[in-house]
Length: 262
Image (cartoon, rainbow, N blue to C red):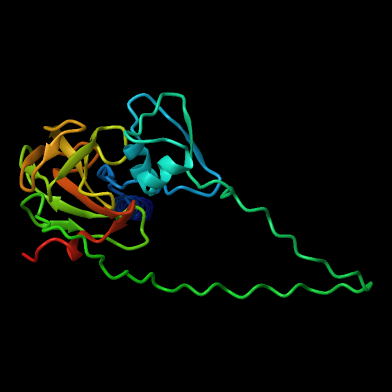
């Protein structure tokens, strides 16, 4: 083999090796992206000072109170609404008591200038403390589990997106009333809950059943503990499940503190 041929062979071999290395590098940096599952997180919509809401077609006072984390009796009193709490589309409702508007900003007195430039002292870092779970109030009810299945989501005190428990199940599975009561909401107007039913058990206690496939009861209907009120589904969720809440005076409490152990 001549010198020219040997030189050409070496160059060709070097080019082939370089091409192979480049191909391996390209393969090693390939990223496969998988689409994420749809979220069933309920948005935080707690009432803020000075807030108002405009009544939409299909709204009920119970639904508005539930969505904003206030007690329906308080909401009615703040707006001068008497039972049976009739409201109308376009009506403006206050989500705070009279005189409870957003507080005025506090002004900090300034020191007179001394002619010297001083660096302001940074405020101390806020100290975060875990939110303590309050002791359960005595409801006076013998609560029942609203559906069979294992827990896939638990209540977290202070987290507006985890205000109840999630129970896994199958499409069409029976959803039952957790205690005797009257249906005060049956609809799909609350974002993040899908097909929702709210049952009033007393002036202080409500329970809610979300993500149903089909609602079997109407507003104003009396229900008994254990009575089927809906079929489980995945409306507003990424899988078949029941989202279940218990509320005391409009505020969510941990259902596991009231449901029987199993």
